[in-house]
Length: 452
Ligand SMILES: [Zn+2]
Ligand SMILES: [Zn+2]
Image 1 (spheres, helix red, strand yellow):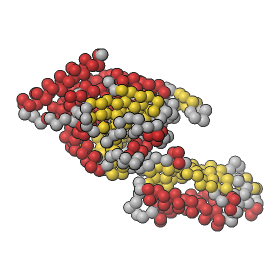
Image 2: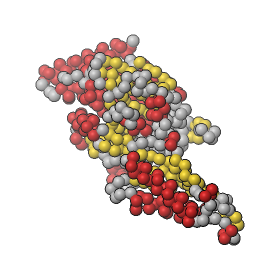
Image 3: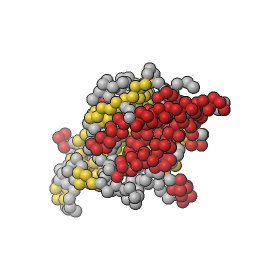
Image 4: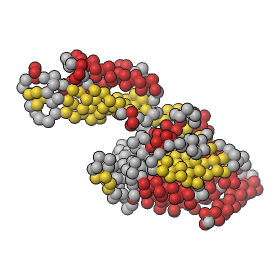
């Protein structure tokens, strides 16, 4: 009820601003921005509290029960029709507001097994049991708490100015982004069939090397295909002093690691980005024992499906070839396992949509606060929403989150900035949250706003 009254009040603000703009002859986009800015300022104290609540109560991927409940409650209070439990702890909320485009806005919900070391008053002290049964510290080290505060803020603002746009909003809280599985499970559970199918999907992600108050976006590929591959190099173990009686998997593993580096340098066309990183190598127990096997874990990055396939095929060919060269029998050749369940496809920002959003961001924030971004080799499962057969245009843009003094220090002395997933990552809530809400509202009004 309170919310309904507030909506009318805000609608009054909206109309008042439009009238004022007409009187003074100012551009209508400015009055829109000012209306939204006034609403954002009004909501901010509560959004800050909500952000700090999420920050202090992080939950691991696939364990986002409380987080999901709170997001659902907030969206419900904002006037959205909410369905919980979509693809696990996923939340889908819908606000129908006449005929017009359907726009999906996504926030992720999950946190990471990181022990927070920011020293903030609201730092997380949470601990939880992970999927292997180990007790771990938990922290919102990727800023998904910022994304949730922005999502709720956007819901409130857009519900308050329903007179200014027409269409349907689908705001979702997505679980398990850090495992790369949440978008897939929500889609499998009918995100695009049980609920209005979007014409556009939008998301933002905080950026750990961009000043708070800034926005940045890139057309086309923004983030990479991410594949995880396990290789088990098998040999024939024995005594370290009788190598002639063994097939040493440690030597073979060393050769393999180096040979894998020739995939990017010698096989992929220069100009086609790709990464092959061997992030883990484990084998052996003692100085004088040649072990039976060595285990490698790899992360692979690429943009196109073709380069991805080429890299995977080369890994299979090289590991097998080196195993044969070492004289291993067929049944002891290396095993290569591609972890399909952890794959996330490259995030592709629809160029026309991205250009349209960048231009409205420049109109709302000024040129200096909207920076072009470069594609990076990180990964995001937001990409999944654009890869169904509907081929929905998507855009994920970056939200600056870093204290200006840290950026200045970094530029002056080269002092490193804490990255995403770092125990030191501490986004600056203001103006980050305000900028995020303003940008999301600007995007929706651009795509579904009534012409002033
Ligand atoms: Zn992350
Ligand atoms: Zn993230």
